[in-house]
Length: 483
Ligand code: PLP
Image (cartoon, rainbow, N blue to C red; front, top):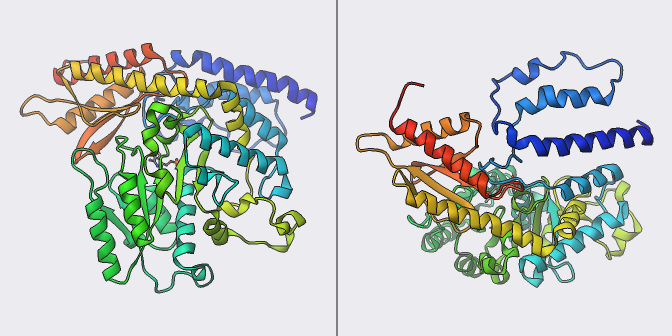
């Protein structure tokens, strides 16, 4: 494809994306496809000869779009949002066009230095501690996901706990404890498995019945029990905004305990952390400045930055880089050896890395901090309004607190009815309607439905339409009538 062809087809492709965003609202949110249906529309064998790019764009409409769950649909209210935005997409195109690899400073100095700079900006924007900034002992890096952030935090914790020996010898007969709750994201257990600690290293700390937040007294019991058994308490995960309900663990109290026993504290604020862009939500950072050894939040969830973009900081980068640094001959260069540059390959699992900082830079520059605040406040405001609608409707009850933009609720069922079954049926009907898309979780074993506001294109009337749809389908669930 010559640059001239690229220019023409590029315009057409940008048009395609803009048209997609414009017509999203007219599409059913969720696909109605059977397993295998998409593949059956694809040729069995790859083309021997090249095809015009327009043929691919035609298949986007005919094959791909009908098989999509439309995450950017303004009435997509499931899971957590996965914001994309024009600014981020265009900057991602620049990144793809440049096609640079930023594994070492020397393999593209601008790729590394822009990332360091933008992550320092984000420290300031989110009110995070100065010790996360790159000009001290700490620093930030963009990981693909919060799951990878947790894995590298665990590897850094092993480096610190094992005084460097584990890197050489492996874990051997050493035993470690990793502390999570039933509400912690499953990536914590996955990290323990990948690091070779096994699921047996993971301790499940109780949560408070009402707030679903980590019970610090129980954490203390588990840590002391491990110490008594000769097991090294390694890492605790405190979540700010859990996946099921956005519960907030008491970071400061967890941190005090971790500090006392030399446990690495990783704060997982994957969804909620970016909301600290608003001064009135800065309480989300309570305890982080004093106690977090590592911290992450995902601009790719709720801060308008196209997936993938997890921002991860450590208070002291030594452990992380000591854990992951290797310098094979083919990567040797004067800059690395001078010790004056950051080589981000030593902060992550893969060697290669995309120029992800461009899209975050573009988002911050396009919206400005004030525009980012407006986006977060819109989500929080709409969720508060939705919660009022839930409260005012006697068929429903709120199932958890809603400090941010996620509302968990459930259908009350008449005496003798099965509440879980009714809520599952309601969810199925709502999603099959194509009007909106919600997901569920369980609190204390009981099914709850989740509405996560905060999509890039979601406005008040979309949430209103979604809630009307829930109400309509609830009538049908409560008083079944023949369809
Ligand atoms: N942590 C929390 C609290 C989450 O809610 C999620 C995903 O929703 C994750 C971690 C995992 O995110 P990622 O897909 O970036 O690994």
